[in-house]
Amino acid sequence: MKQTLLLLLVVFIFIACTDDTPVYAPIEEDEVIQVDSSIQGRLNNGESPLDIYAENNTNLDSLYGKIYAGGFIFYFDESDGSGMVADLNDLSGLYNWGCEGIRVGGTYPYLGTGATNTEQIASECSVNSIAAKACLSSEAQGYTDWFLPSMDELDEMHTNLSQRDLGNFKLYVYWSSTEKDKNYAYKQLFNLNKNIGYYDKDLIKYAVRAARTF
Image 1 (cartoon, one colour):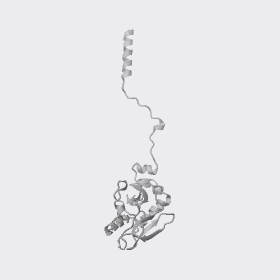
Image 2 (cartoon, rainbow, N blue to C red):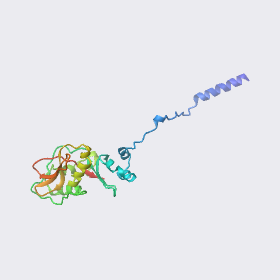
Image 3 (cartoon, rainbow, N blue to C red):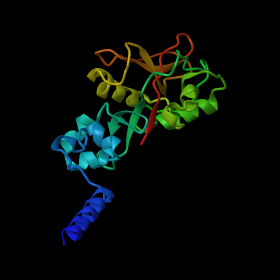
Image 4 (cartoon, rainbow, N blue to C red):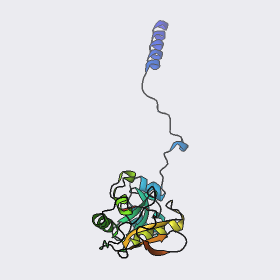
């Protein structure tokens, strides 16, 4: 009888030692995965600006300067969720607007006209290495639909990014895609004032910050 009990004990110990059933350690409280609920975190996790705005429209100002769709958000249309972003950096170098003495025509100052302005300049101006063509050839952040912002779009960049110390802007003069006449085009100095004006298309080279829509 004692031998039988001893044998059973040995078998039990053997089975216990060879049991490969996984053992899971309990998750400690401080190991719980943290979800980034900030505006930038929510954008990074796939929410759209419209999702965020629709939940709480006081988030509108908080969207400005956040990185989305390849750049810094500087304009958002609450009615349909579309908007515009500025490239993360200025284009390398400085540029002429181009084609002094030639009226390009068909360029406008309004929001939403920068892309068509840029195409118009590129099609009517044969000069290479100008601001509009530099934007069209940009592939920043993997996007190929960058354009030179219109006068009003450039001012939105200034108001919603630069004046809030967002967007990596410098104290430079930036070109818009809005032509004044055959010799001049509109530009803006990014300082504390609006300083919108126009200057000779080919006399001085200015900075360029491309934009795209989402």
